[in-house]
Length: 391
Ligand code: GAF
Image (cartoon, rainbow, N blue to C red; front, side, top):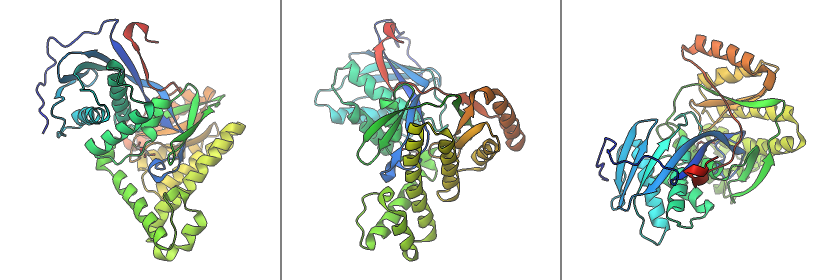
């Protein structure tokens, strides 16, 4: 077990000065294409203007000292012992340090890191990918390690899988690192090839609605869904097929094999195959400026996640149903792993306030819980700079 040496922030913990390295690590949205990354499908994420700020300084020891101001969490981790611990936050940090250590041939040295700003945890905005990629990018920059973006993305994914226990795909890390201003990433998760698509939503805007129901993916059904998909693929291939990913299976093939696939697995597979088609249609709709079709695809995506993939919940369903009745909202769906978190909505810019007012009231009355609206702009992925030069 790794030793947690200290709980209190020590007096000699650094106060940032203009020469320090600052890394901005954003959260992400996903317009459509949920649970497709680990099924080799296409996804359509983007980085957003809500972010963590990580400030780094070398400390010339073999200890990494990390303090999150917003959560008032402090930890010290020895680079000589990177075995997992019981608490979540530290495990992320240990996990990415272990990945970086494995990746580079030089000896890794210690640093101090102050984390400011916050992304809501469990809201489906990928706060963990922002933290992991932000740390990896910062360490890479601080020690001039020459690690490529692609390796950073894959290392952050591995850290989450091995140290936090979520068998996640690659979408979140990719969006956090590769996001561009006002653009969506049409990412093929099988090859990691991607296309940048201009996000032209005017006069509509993206609005997230946070249910404030917090999921913890590793505790939830997320890993189970991944296993179910692997199981469905195995059965399909046992009938003489040789597909590498579930998203490659034609719908007809699935339907013809109904008699050998348990009903629940059929539903999971059907969702994956249909959602992948929806992403490709959404890409076309975006390129043609057809926001009505895009919105319809978002609603269809939500229905699939609710009825076939079973990862929605009453709170998310109410929000999407409410949006669907409103003619000034073109599309809405749950976003991310599910079981809580946010919906993503495409709302007319002149109607934002009224929509938020009415849906918040209905949400509060039904669940006795506040709804948190988060208007988002699509922003660049991770940036590193000296604190004095930050934008
Ligand atoms: C979470 C995971 F981390 C992603 O990899 C992805 O599977 C997503 O849920 C669902 O699309 O954010």
